[in-house]
Length: 558
Image 1 (cartoon, rainbow, N blue to C red):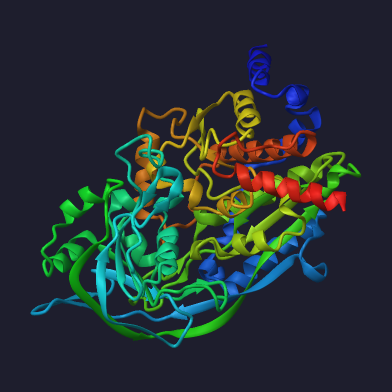
Image 2 (tube, rainbow, N blue to C red):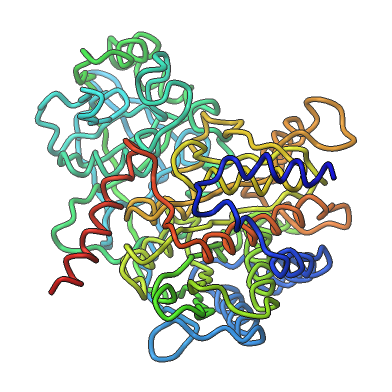
């Protein structure tokens, strides 16, 4: 009786058209097919040493693709890639090369920074050599141009050929600007490199601190070392010669060549009135860059919908199948494989279990369901970027994207963390479904990390596709207050993007099972409900959604 009262209360949150259809008996039964043993088995294969860390374009990458395609085939999903294949192949450009030192100089002195300890850098050009020769170093604050906030860190200065020193994150002192403590897309490293290239800079250096990045320096060292990948560049795309990160301490050493103080520069950058600051310092480097083309693929499986009209629309599930591969030069006896068990073998396992639950239903839902295991997420969301540009249906026909990036391995929680809570109408059914599990919805509990812009749903949101991205919360059943946050921070410090992200016998999948059932039930609800999800009025992604829907109407009118 209590469960029924909770369910009734949850239904109040839903639009009238959907209140009678939160779940069906068949969906509840199908959700029970999602089991811990199956999740563990999928993770066990995908994160095995045999797959060598699933680096893009490697044998392990191909093995992961084949495994996922085989699972789709066993489930009876139809191939959704080109030419009747489960694979959607595309090329990556791999670049291997970095400078051993960066040299900074003024009229009388010079300072050299060392690769790995002081800085991490890679080529920004898909060419055999990257060069900076006496490029003027200019501090540009956060490197943000945001007309909606009347914010422009460049102020029209001619920055062509210069190297830009940029703060990570976005201004957070004023809650009315850039979401306050919550990180927006303007705080993302890839946004800053893109903006630097657009203004014609030759190089860009991001200043790393653990609070501003949301992760420690060791994550920069592992994630941006070794071969780096991009999609093939078009000739008209502006490019940097070098993309780099520096530590706080190394940056302060560089600024000793200037008459500027880093803390004062940071303070000045928090104001709309900030202007770029030439530092009177030149930066130089030259390094060889090995460039090669690497094949990879997204893996696409389709469950056709049962309604003649709604089946033209899809609910899109995504989870990235790649990880970081292997260390280039491991020490004797050192674990060299970045297995990526949580990140993101567990997410692929979750998607496969959700797909199986859909096939257990006695009848397919009205809308079609597209399952996409995307490639090269760790390289900058490249697989989802490619899929977003090569969807099998127009963006206006994608009802929603449900993205899965990492599962909870520590047990059941009383809460569900929704990344991007308040952005779309998907909040209402998700809240109701969580309450039916006896759980509460919470907004991102680490808003300063900018998680909404760090995983694959971002590329689909940019097309206007409403996105749901959520995971277990931090209020663990049977654990003291604060335990969940402590475990999260400990895992990130020790295992995130490290070889130790491996499947262990101590993994507790009980909370993961509840989450995966929630992933399935939300998708089933969207696939059955006639009303399309929508972004909330005024959201940053509302305009592209309206444009995508208008494009469909215009096409239908022809």
